[in-house]
Structure formats: C-alpha cells, structure tokens
Length: 113
Length: 115
Figure 1 (tube, rainbow over the protein chains, first blue to last red):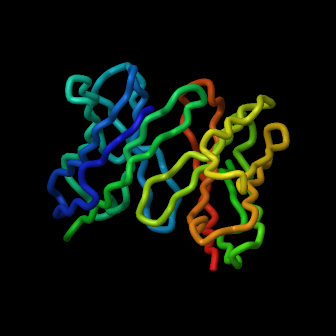
Figure 2 (tube, helix red, strand yellow):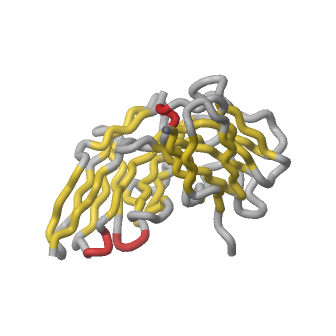
Figure 3 (cartoon, chains in turn orange, red):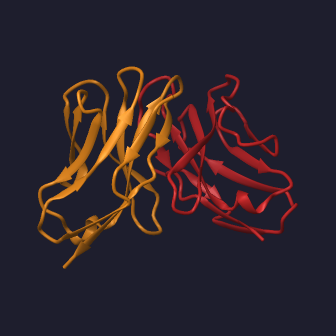
C-alpha cells in the first residue's frame, strides 16, 4: 500500500524567507504525488501534482516540488514566504485504480511578520 | 461555475442516532469520493464511485457506514447508530474521471459531532 510521511507537523518561518515542507513517500511503483493546501475555514485546494513527467513541478502561488526517486522524497518549497501562505499543507499519493488519495498527516505553516 | 457542495455544513447528533450527509458534485464529473478527516489528522479515503460501476467501498470503517450515488449526480453518506469516534469532518470530492490522474475538487465538508 502507498503511504506518505510528512516529517514536520509544524513549520514556522519569517515573511520573505524560504519555505521547506518535507515529505517522504512509500510506493511499490512509480507514484503520482500531490500537494494540497487547506486555509482556515476553506476547502482543500490543489497546489501541484507530479505524474512521471518532469521531476521539478511548479504549482500555484510560487510553490514548487521536486520528485527524487532515490530519496523517495517530494519536498515542497517556496523561495519567499508571504503571510497569506499560512495554512495546513498535505502531501498526498494516489493509490491504485480510481485515483484514491492517501494523505499525510499535514504540516501547519506559520508565517511571522 | 459551481463547485462541490455539501450539506449540512454542521451536524450535531446524539450517540446511537442515524445521520445522512449529502454531496453535490461538479456537473459532468463521473468520479466521486468521500473522505473523513479526524481532528489533527490527514484525510482517510472512505468510498469511490465511478460512473455506473460498482463503488469501491474498501475504505468504509464498519458496516454502519454506507453510501449511494444516483447516476453521476448527488451522493449521500449514511452513518447508522453513530458513535463518538465518528465525530470528524466528512469531505466529498469529484473529478472528471477516476480512471485518470485528474484533479479532485473538494467540497467544504460536513462537520459531524456525536455527543
């Protein structure tokens, strides 16, 4: 079975500094991986997805993630944090037929002014 | 256009009662999913509908949980004889087609509290 592990439950950065949210996955074959964001009192929104094309994936709002098969990682980065980036972020892997999503436990990003 | 909608947004029920949660997917989306999000945890897959095919019920936690979908439209998730551990946010998502890696669009969720 597929699984994802988000290595940090909370990350705190200052506005204007880089963001790194870490994710490792476990998969028996080439996975499809996603990052979703959930702002307070709002629905889940897709940030970006990897489906075996380019290993560096660019998403919305300046976020990007790099698929590294040798490290089984799919870390999310952003060069410069903005206050509006404060939210909970989920690393997600697609499992099998039907594109059922398996979610990590989430990382809460706090951005300090 | 309209996104995925769910009702009610909040539901408080007494232990042992049955509850019914509703999801209206995006028009034209053949795939529909139900997930559960317990406090402080990621989402857990519950059930998946694809067109008129038999649903994938592999994520349902017990036989107290069931779901139906009429064609490619509305879905209802029913929890019978609710227990306190059923308290969670129940999220519905739809996508163009579950046989491909299409984006899943999530509804706002129903927050269920069992007292």
